[in-house]
Amino acid sequence: MFNLRLFSFIYLLVTVIPFASLRGHDTRAYELRTYYANEGKLDDLVARFRDHTTGLFAKHGIENVGYWVPKDNPENQLIYIIAFPSRLDQESMWKSFQEDPDWRAVARASSKNGRLVKKIESVFMQTTEYSMPIKKIQASPERLFELRTYICNEGMRRHLDARFRDHTIGLFEKHGIENIAYFHPMPDQEGGASTLIYIVTHESEEGREVAFGNQREDEDWKAAAAASVERAGGRMVIEGGVTGQLLVPTDFSAMK
Image 1 (cartoon, rainbow, N blue to C red):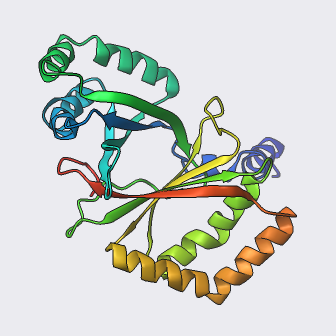
Image 2: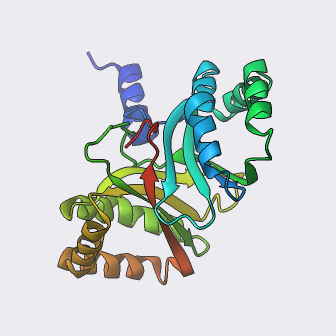
């Protein structure tokens, strides 16, 4: 016997609910944080994270995803990603961490000879619907990470996302570039509607140059790039809107 209710429910699943929801899309709130250490204080800052901060994060339910320093680091940066079940959880967990007496004692002790941090930048993110699951692999030898940011012209990010989803990530893998994760800033963040942030890895800096060179010359890439620009009706990324940093994982990073 035909069951109208069952049919309607199945129809709703396959036509209305996004496919990402059905496959369990990652809805955690990620935070990308960049610390600029004061002159001569980077090693002390890294030690504080290694010996204290990461453990205190875990104590308060904050997930340590990865910690890196730029391969060339003239600004004394420490870059890391942490995760929370939701943005609301972030507020309560961060407050709990900051009010922890153990953290306050560590912060005082580590700063007795001067403040470690000059400036902090932060952006809250969520993975794109086409991002792969984030795997905390301890690779040997360690991989060279690359953090890349694309800033799009107004209304163009959906076209860039489509190109990455349908072509670029597959071509990266084809040429030995490992996809780690793809993010959008949350809507209330700067660039929330126009920015794509992603992480890939390479075996080495020399391997990176070879891989990207081969990708640029790949006929499939040339065709995909041309077709995506034609569909978008113009340039997707603003002039100078692609930036990248080569990153080396710290010895305590959950991801290497």
